[in-house]
Image (cartoon, chains in turn purple, red):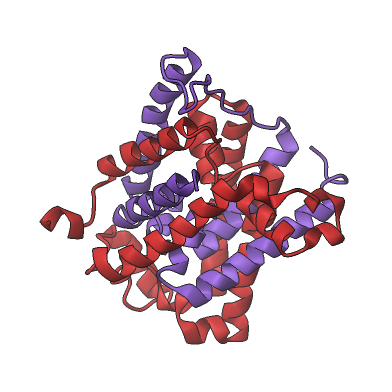
Length: 137
Length: 185
């Protein structure tokens, strides 16, 4: 099981998100109301440190575990898909206070509501899959 | 030991999230969370209905293990690492939510008005959760990422699509919190 390290990393990430309160509905409400610096500090800090790490990847200073160059996959382009898709996600995130990784973490806190959100997310992803060829990019 | 049980400040969160991203890439994979929604659809048999889901989910065993880790980590945190879920909210936030009819604002991570078991089983509560979930699932896949994939991985890698996606996240989140929440409650 060489991938068991991802399980450990998942546990670590969940503990970090839980301990900094980045899974709390109240924290996201506060963020979207611009009433607290907390979440902006967390996300901003994560982006700044990650940007430095990305530079080390790009310059080949740090290679992956197998010695290969690390090339983060470019994101799919498209103004409509990112803005409209992003807005849909933001609506769900703002109301339920759950985003994609935290929804799994919240299962460990409040399993029933989190399971319903997750079920909804699977339905949403399924609808996207059905429509993916017809939606503008 | 004291430090483990206290809430961690924001400036600890950013670097530790970045460390997670670093290790994910170091282990040879692209950091993100929302692709798992598609993988779970594939595992549930969505490939029979749509070719979009005809993929080999075993290629994503690493991500599924990460997800299992997230659930275990959440369970460990809620039961053993967070003895007090009080959140130091802005007094303005506290007052607003109390005025909207929320009880025990900031005393726990999750408001009972949305996350209570009885609420989740009521028609209104169930619809709020499942429709929010549907927006999350549809939106993240259409946009091509969530907070992990776009806001953190994409922005730190200077990806323009990620900047647009994050603008979208905030358009949606602001509509939700400024207009929908007062409308629903």
